[in-house]
Length: 220
Image 1 (tube, rainbow, N blue to C red):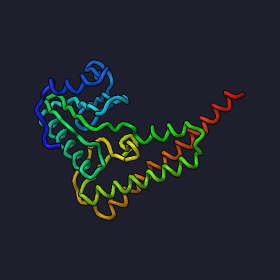
Image 2: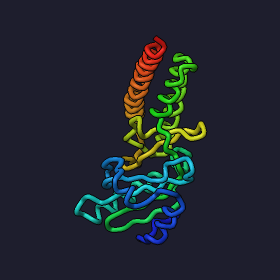
Image 3: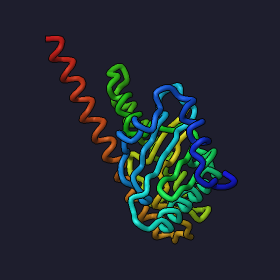
Image 4: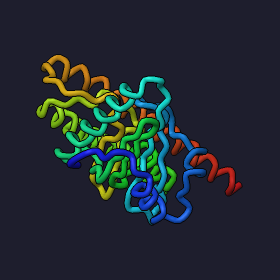
């Protein structure tokens, strides 16, 4: 993305009006959570939406700090996107009380993606666990690619890992930063990251047992 525009709600509303059911009122009732910059909302996640409109609502009294952290988040997402590791940002507006970011739609996080497959009992659990290992290796390569280019995500929990058309992405760059990472720090960060996928495999196996048990009870 070339630049961040000043607040222009007519332009922002143009994006929102393109999608049925996307209104500010609905938006205000569906916060995703509190991020580094403020409370985060998101709309246009239905199948017919090409983009996601992400709104960060300022909650700090320090306007300049809010703007600085939002600019940093947008800058870091651009850095990762240049390497093919993040959704592309098409347009961003920064106001005193809100930031509006229009980006490529990538909203299928890895946890939901895997659990949807787990619920299909025609797919052997061994195949799913093997696929989780493949996903882990794919994300590790992405982490190392970031390291090689002097960028660190620093918030790679399962909800910030996504997939779209078999392509893996990182999400949410509020804690990302630029730094040359030492070999020992790389290894430590990778070891911590692997724990996320160990838990994912455990959750997948437990969910499959639960799904199979429910199907068995229904057949009785």
